Image (cartoon, rainbow over all chains, first blue to last red; front, side, top):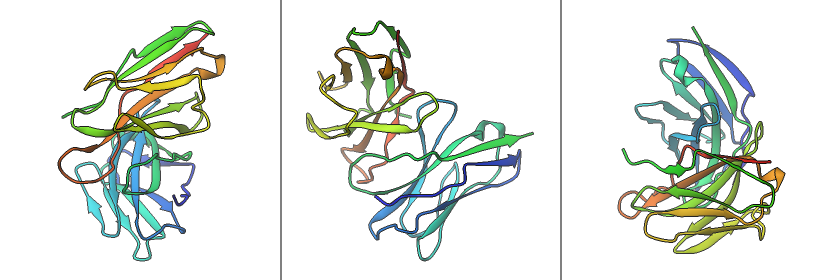
Length: 110
Length: 117
């Protein structure tokens, strides 16, 4: 599976949009971009995933560049409860392990 | 909404003792996983399980570890003789509903904190 690069940390003001970048320049054609988050040692929580098209659900939006070498997770209106480590993981859609990196520590401040 | 559950939430044991960590995956899922996270470190894959067999295991998953699906609902991780370095959070995950999208989105349980003294 392709590797990803994320900034180690970022701050966001409560109520503002949080834009979390991820680089995955070696992504293959059959690999999806998955986003998970982990709130203070709880189990990782699935957020969203996509292949080529932009995706949106009740938690977030995922914007994938046309060349698929990078993506951005958007939390539209960050709340204090969104403070967490966010992981961008590239993986095929067949079954198999998730390879977690260090992720981005997002701190939402009042 | 269906969720993965794990018991106990915290297990304290003496070095050399056997522990069994229990998980109840989402009921119609077919693939099961164990991951662990040592304090301050990354989440690491241990093992995946499908059709009553181990599909893949990491280097961490040595002979001290075993997994089992003893019935239609539980999925267990056994550590035969615990070491100090086994102290970690252990997460169970499941994926692949029997019917529906073929996505491999994995859903995680809340974890069991294992402390080996």
